[in-house]
Image (tube, rainbow, N blue to C red; front, side, top):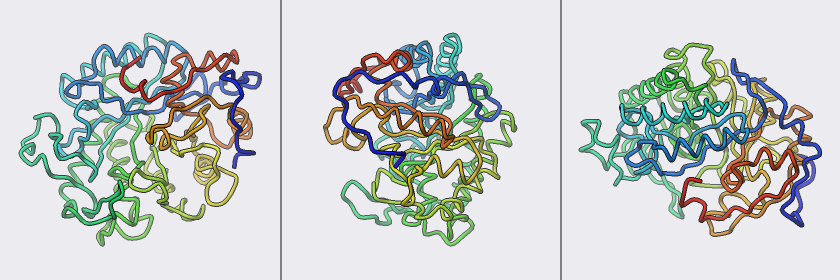
Amino acid sequence: MLGHAPTTATSNRLHGTRSGVLFTPTKLGSLELKNRIVMAPMTRAMSAQGIPGENVAHYYRRRAEAGVGLIISEGSFIPHWSASHEENAPRFYGDDALAGWNRVIDEVHAAGGRMFPQLWHVGLVRKPQVEGASGLFDEDAEASRRLGPSGIIGGGGLPLAQVRAPATEREIGEIIEAYGNAAASAKQLGFDGVEIHGAHGYLIDQFLWAETNKRSDQYGGDRTKRSRFGVEVIQEIRRRVGWEFPVTLRLSTWKNQSYAASLATTPSEWAEIVTPFVTAGVDGFHLSQRRFWEGAFGTELNLAGWTKKLTGKPTITVGSVTLNNSMAEMLQGKDSEPEDNLALVYSALERGDFDLVAVGRALLANPDWPEKIRKGATLRSYTRSMLTNLD
């Protein structure tokens, strides 16, 4: 634990007396950030046909105006027919969608904010009814196809099973190229960097997890070999955008298919996974936990803390910040009440355990979360109904 586990707040008013550490500047690669507050990526699926509209631009601008230091967009599909998942989740290709993203970043910059798009390929959890790439690729005739390292998928109460043939090396190469194309588009549009989604059981994570990667070629085997796909994604992005453009990688040990899953059980095993990503060129890591205060590998240090300790790179922590339950519990129908767990955040930042703090649901409920924390003001509760609109 990062100190003692938080206790349920007796009111919605959180203490701002030590909040100063949240509002100190920091750097992520070459990018200077005015504070340590990050808007976590959250799938909203309100971009009709994958095109971010004015409502999306307003949604992100509102958080930038409130003082969020770095905004990370919801996952946006890379330009490959197999990447798609949600019909109205945004895509990061096509003139129409890129024009929408251009409007988004212009609005965020006008409000003094900084923003990364999160580049996303869902792998084998792709919904077959969602046509790949909204009609922009010839392979749309194969809309029921899904790609992953070994064709193995499960979850949702179903056991892991091989349901598809493994992705071919040619297909893997095409996907790697698509990541590079998306990153190049982000740089051209004026985004401040990119985040690669490598967590939660999606494609990169499917390569990392031994249960879904049974390959015997260069993309399978021990932990370092299972990292190779992610390494080559980073290398291709670096080839396309250079070394001054910030690149972060989001990782988790849990996944949507299994909350009990783990990529590593010790710090040394975790180092085998993350060290190759540093060599390939990431500037920082975004470590997703259901509850940020829970220690990793049987220690008091959380996953963001261990990743920083092992790599020397800046890290972002996330997971139930100022809320009393996790995202998984929310999906089971439980609303989220404010909880004063900020003392743990402040102490960890002061120790240098991690560098930035991502806020998700609490920032949906409270677009002005930074100012409320600075002033010690009252926070609104988060309810699932808030997912039905962009506010």
